[in-house]
Image (tube, rainbow, N blue to C red; front, side, top):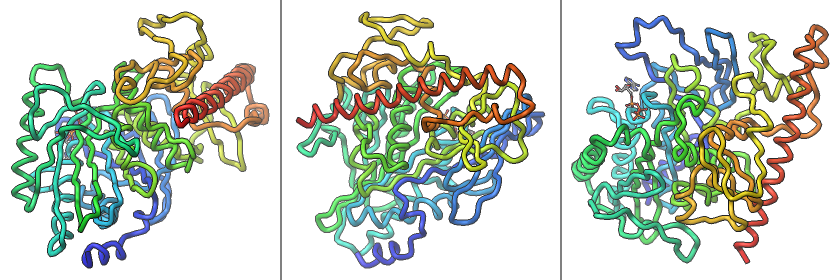
Length: 472
Ligand SMILES: Nc1ncnc2c1ncn2[C@@H]1O[C@H](COP(=O)(O)OP(=O)(O)OP(=O)(O)O)[C@@H](O)[C@H]1O
């Protein structure tokens, strides 16, 4: 225990934050170096140890947005740097029973797997974490085991010990979901780990052969479980499914689980009382490792030449990050500008992502509604949870309420925007050069905003009511 405690004392301030969201840029690949596309992501400002402001700009249209996140790792930074600054500090806690999770999220090809697995010469977060755990455990009365599984379409599959069927996820006495029958393989050395992990990887690849890009759409979870003299802690290292820009590639199920995860991360970051764990299989499985005294690090991986995908990833990962207007950017005529607060514009909605009232709110008394080709099922009056929940399409999983209200995959954009307080002041009204179109847009936006606000309030109340009903 002594070595773990010492390392814990040396932990940086990053370990004291329950959830950190950091950005990682992937360098250009040889095939991209000749590309004329300019990088769309940059860092503006930021001091060591404090928040950073990440600026995303679409060169073609000059659209730009800024997000505040916890740290920024550029294309020259190595995975080792991320590990040293963000991950190593949380490992000693695992020896004291504090669970932790590291996620890599991003679009396909943004470098998630590279970040988590690395290469033989440049190990990624997973091998670095295992080797740190093994080093810390040396000389201690502890055991280290790993499990490796993937979550695909709301189902879990063991990658270390092949089984005919999916792994059942069942509630335990504390209300945590346990994966029944999941293999845990003892690991005493890096050789043990490499042997088990590479077999798991092989199985993953074989299982996916011919299955049309499954690896991009499944979440791969490597868990390290440490039992230290009777105290058990877990470190989950997760390569999430590719979160493609939903306006371009519509994948209900992935969108649903990533959106549910994003909701949980956002709620934890904002210290909210109600954490919506039950909205997806992944968040249910991770419930004992997210929240409470657990630690989480979200690594948002970005490909700098993909503006829409980068924007989508940052929005999903960093929803609690306040948006500011960059000093250098102008307010476009196409932008709806809202909520001016002490010189900071809190929210800028652009045409392409402005949700309409029609696609945010859909109330119906029918059992099924069909919109834009996506079949929706109205939620029953008591929200299904546990395993059934993960089998639901996004329309259900996204919307834990008891009213029969539905929201579809594309509609989730509305909720990806930061919440805007009531009584938002109309900035356009204060700009003397505002055109009639600006004014009309602002009016429409205010109307929209209050609809969104009402809807969010309703969802919060309904979710809490459903939760308290469940608790009874
Ligand atoms: N930091 C990096 N340095 C060098 N090459 C990188 C880096 N990050 C990613 N790459 C390369 O970029 C390509 C895509 O990376 P990777 O496979 O990790 O993406 P991904 O986000 O996991 O994609 P998918 O969702 O399809 O699994 C790979 O060829 C990888 O080797």
